[in-house]
Length: 288
Image (cartoon, helix red, strand yellow):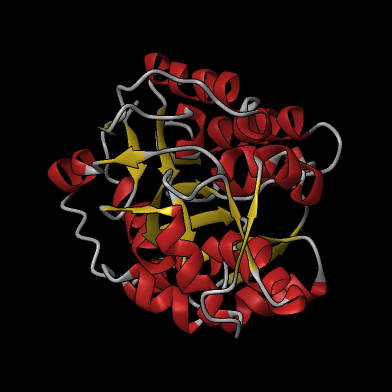
């Protein structure tokens, strides 16, 4: 089996290439720079020079593959349009082969306790653009194509991820880790290697499926930030921030960090046999 992947040199992409090759699957990975090409090549993938805006390159690469995993995001101006055009090129290229599209559980907004993929949608500003794109992607199942959407939770592990960038590193510099609000809101966490396994399994999912990629760890932000303070070298030194203060410091992503989200993730376990194995997020987060 030959899979084409975008975003392969990124945080989740690197683990996904490891997972694919670990299953004996050959991988071609889009690489927009020499550095990205070296990263994916070192992981065992064949680099293909190009960017998400190179829709002809995407179409041809997908046409030559048995399946596609679309992880890449271009956060330049016009993110939604770039993502939509890339998805269309990849879907048209791969035809009836599996196409796995990346979403994110943030589009559900605050949840009322533990929910699943059928919960109502209420995205914060930073992810609102995803809704229409995902709707268009999934609609193509009716035309005989094979779209699947994977929606990761807050991804951690391997000393990377958003928690590292927005909490540990600033905490290390300031001597205290920020905590948005009173810390009673929950993060739906998933280890980067576990979500990578879900991407591999999703290649065999029914067309039109949507899976919340969460590892069953719905932890209060207060506990998470305490763990992150240890990773930052300032144990238990926490700086409380209002959402407004956090937005001024971090940008609109702070609104997403402030969400209260709890997910079951049971659908992927039941339908795909996904079994997350990294279940001690606080210990790993504290180690950095």
